Image (cartoon, rainbow, N blue to C red; front, side, top):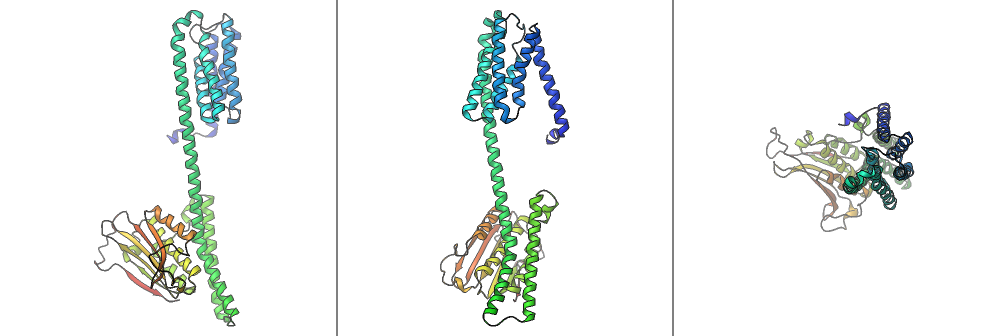
Length: 418
């Protein structure tokens, strides 16, 4: 159906012109039934103005509709004063145009203005049957007038339906734009913030070491600046990818949007350990083999990346970080469990169950939203004797069988020293 209506602009213009010519010819033909050239011209004008109101721009609709209603009433009045009357019609095309004026007025205009325009069209519809010969009044008026009123009521209901449909579509459009803005905000926070945080941490390390009277050696400075350069390059790459997606959401750039898979977790933790605390990655082999749906795999990667970014920001004295990604549940309803734990002493004073703490912010909110999109949950907080922990549980749509693994072989550990 969309392909049927997918007509070039030139073709649409030709179709509109042809439709206008046919409708104008129909109105003129009805006017010619009066047997009078002036009456035929008057009928053409009174029928053409409501039709023009239907095709007019929104800012010109009120004037055109009012002119059409007044012209229709005036022609009806003149017809009752003259003997030039049609024998078979009272203006069917004009009547349909007035009904459509009611529909468009109710759909587009504010309530008071819509009521005024619809009321004027109803008056014109009520008296239009007087264009027939007086001998037809007794036979047609008792049936035609109620029928026209009923048609006008249906037109008003149709206009209200279209008005509500337009409002619903506008709300959906606004909600879509808001969701898109939030998604882009999460992307910028996750992808760019991670690399910028690494740059800030390296810069602070140089400043603090210099202020303490132990400036880094030339070799150490070269390594630090190399890490800053790498993080800056990655941030620029993420920015370019995001700009590409924003410029052409449906084009080739969408495929280059920043993302991540579980296979990239080892590279992510290795880069983090170069400038941060020692990091341990525990990743189930079945997950590392790439058996997860792309959306869930990307969500897991983002949870780990954001958690590591929070460690760099808020747990500067942490000595060890553990990243655990494994399967949980039975084989029919499995889930992916993700936990990122650090031993930062800044969380030692917190007790109790995991809860949102001082590290809660846009990052954790964004992670909760991302996890909710795939049916998962995220919690974060301090635990006694452990430190700060971010945990996520994401259910899978189905089992992930792997006959190459035994029943107890479900994970592998890799320790990366800073």
